[in-house]
Image 1 (cartoon, rainbow, N blue to C red):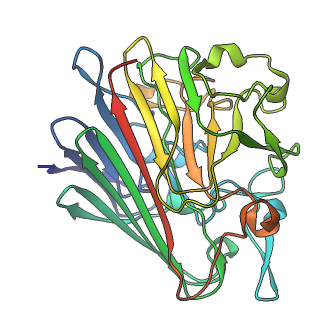
Image 2: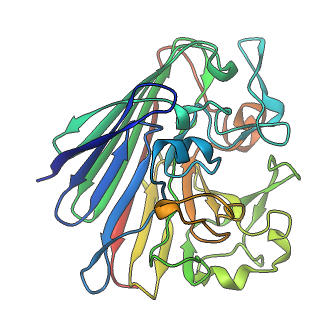
Length: 343
């Protein structure tokens, strides 16, 4: 049984209030905000059975609105980058909001991470709903979105559905920053992935070719500490890991991506997803962001595992389709985060 507890709302500096709820199944617990669909806290037991929060967050709405790290939020209408903020559907070119190195990143500066979502209970979690109007950040079509956060034993399920009344690329992701031991660094975390391919990028983060992980610093078939990646040639341009790894294109069901673990706490997190890619980001640019207890966050303090469609897919259909959802079609993203204390 999942217990649903409303918490005191926050004042939104832009007007109105931001809802906060906690859900708890006795094993995992989650605090969710109606602002950006944010996961503010996620409590998971360590090897001693002590629950602790494993995601980064902020103290109030103003701090969330001031930061640009997408802490715990839903990124959309299109996660990651669209080159030049431009794409063409149905013979019409669309210009999106440009907010990073000449590209549209995570849906633009007023993307889904800054929207107020409708928030309500489910028997095993919470449901968030949002309507993004035609032309929002330049994206065509009225887009209706539903996000479910559900707890089942030691699993967090995140399921996303979306549709649009005009052809539009859609890619949503959950942008939580995971630190499995509550420390100020991710460098002792170990990452293992089943992926054998990743996307190389230009100097603005837009992919330009598929590479094999074999014989590279991005070969994580065996658990690899993030400390060991420091100085690797493939990671110099991004100041650390910030790469999209590819999963098989032919399997619509959940596929295992890999496992993040901490020997210090014993916590492990295995990710399964139906998305074709997972962006792994090592918080390389997090330095100076204000977090909880008004503490400044550090570079390399956490790790984001972001299941998503392929970056810039509307312009690079040769890599993995164009990610365009046509009227009558439904975008469906489901990811499972399985936690253990066996690291």
